[in-house]
Image (cartoon, rainbow, N blue to C red; front, side, top):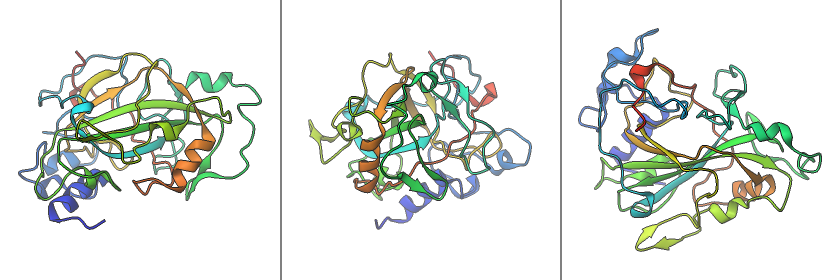
Length: 283
């Protein structure tokens, strides 16, 4: 996908490879001091991921919540191996990780209660990347990213803006899943985009229901390149469902083979943000 200079800067921010000093004028920018080793980010807005059962936060950087996702354009769908967020239903710690965001995060409690049939090996490798593939019983966190820009969904978070819309409101609809080898479980393709338009907006064919009222809060982009010392400058409205759901792993494998977002493997997770100075208050 060809993107302009503005989109390239945005993508660099999302990937954590640009210092805050080069983005003066971008919404939510901070300054280089926040990147000093051992020091929590200074001057940045609230960060993500977080424990959504804990409502407290002390970050004073306030921005307007994005509109409902039905009044925005879907711009990207991707998923992370293990949950980035934490809640009662997904609170099993997966470990400190490999330094690249894998083998960390949180797992669903229901992952420990699956039948032998649900845990049966798949016929082929699912969404295999350089950090391995997905297995029945694994947890993933799916992000449906929405923007107020007039764009078409595509690869990477650079697809969420354009040269004519450099400062959008962003919202991420979020669901944590346990993967099972069961055709009776949810079908990921039912939650895909596939060119769906509703009232003039690009929309997923459906979003998960029946997993509790989404917890909404102000935060940032995520991903393993960020930490409590290297913060994300982007401002994002989050909507995280508090309960897990079972998802047919075979349909995730089908999606990885062909989708509008060029996604073919799970992303790593950012460590949970716990410093109250880096969290917003959940109202």
